[in-house]
Amino acid sequence: MSVVILVRHGETEGNIQRVWHGAQDAPLTARGVNQVAATARRIQVLVVEYPIDAFYVSPLPRAKSTAAAIADALGRDAVVYPDLREFDLGDWEGRTFQDLAETEKLWEHWSTDPYFAPPNGESPRSFSRRAMRAVEELVQRHPQETILIVTHSGVVTQVLANWLGDGPDDWQRWEPENCAISILANEGNGWRGVEVNGIDHLLPGLVRPEVAANYTT
Image (tube, rainbow, N blue to C red):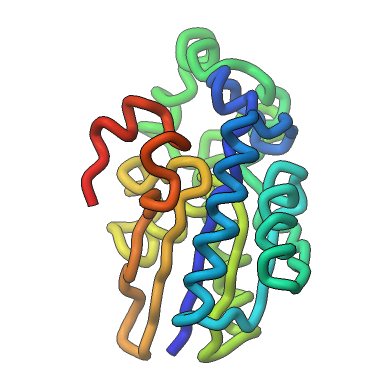
């Protein structure tokens, strides 16, 4: 059986400020640091059932900081895999979601053209191809093994949308919270979600209050 465990990085200042910082970085918040510690403890429990054969991480510091805590808990280092990095918005990086919506009409563009890319940035379709190629290469590299991947919301949503949903344009309903965990398994007849965007290990105090209020297991 092939197993892929996906972990989104801990909360950053950019997440709080609703700033697009895909290829850029921002420090973890205090809550993000605590999320990471709780996630490392959760992974320690998971490895009893799913012993980790391979451990990979995005090259961006927020993901590497998250992976470092997990690495300490597991006693093994993560391997940096460049194509696990977040969606790169090019010249529009560092701007708020509201500004991108109002000034650039970004989501309007994407709703009609998934090949639209900002200057020097990626389009949704090119990002999806890159993210899926990366994860599928790792699965091929480690057949019938368990792979732990620490990455970003964009990568997680694409994997879930493509493996469990209706394809790359189905990404919005799969967005994970910071440090959410997904466990995907394939016994030869397609991928299934054992756990999808799980945050039980973060409740009640390590998620946004509105998320905790609406969360059901």
